[in-house]
Length: 320
Ligand code: SF4
Ligand code: MG
Image (tube, rainbow, N blue to C red; front, top):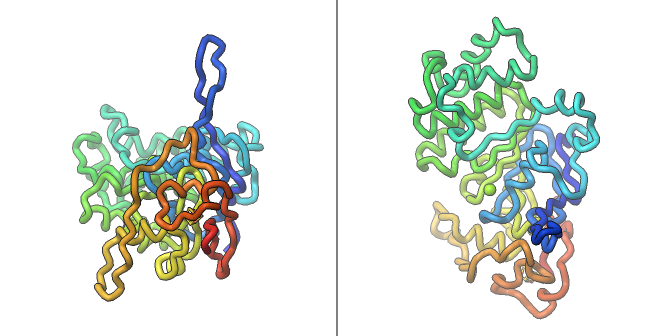
């Protein structure tokens, strides 16, 4: 399908400043040269441990954080080259959903008003139509118009995430970036919210960038998956390719932690030593070498190239 979002060599460094002169003494390399393309109607799962930079990718797309370098194209337009007016027009088309929608809901604002607010702000509907539009999205998100005048604290975690989704959906976006949208929820509720994402995609032809630390969450929703480690993409491929034929040791380690329903498919368990290193001074060569059970000498000095190994499967590892 035609690309909706293209990210080319994205970098986001956060400078660490020190002293009276406020000199930059180091950089947190949160995102360190990431490229990915998401086709219209696709669901791209961006996976990695916390601190891998995946949220920063999402925030750079909607410009909640400003990139350091690289290009982000939405519908072929470089979103960092748009004028203020053009950006305002395009903003509703890309919506970000957070892990905890409660933190972005004002406790004193009725949810109907919170959901309708965005429509009003963007001038996308006349005032007298807003209540009907809110009722409509509440219904689409599995809530009812009965909830419209309630306050955020009256809802459960799963319902609050439905409110978060409704608030994004009312703007009729093309792209939804969902950052750990089910991580704070009970497993039973997670499945309901994932089913809601899937249903909305079928009904509305939405495209998703779905960010998660949990491969089992993206497994049933995503068409393509990218695995990030310390700001770098280690492997990308179709969901089937990645689950059946993972090539990067880090992907294998993440997958080996995912329970398999059929015991004979049991994957070799790979346990990683230590924690994810600091992104301030990431390891030289392959950034994963300090934790990789298969590391060889050259991994410490040579950065592995991100190579296409066939069927649109890319991997950055010297041993592949
Ligand atoms: Fe492991 Fe070396 Fe491959 Fe990096 S390049 S994943 S350290 S084997
Ligand atoms: Mg995060």
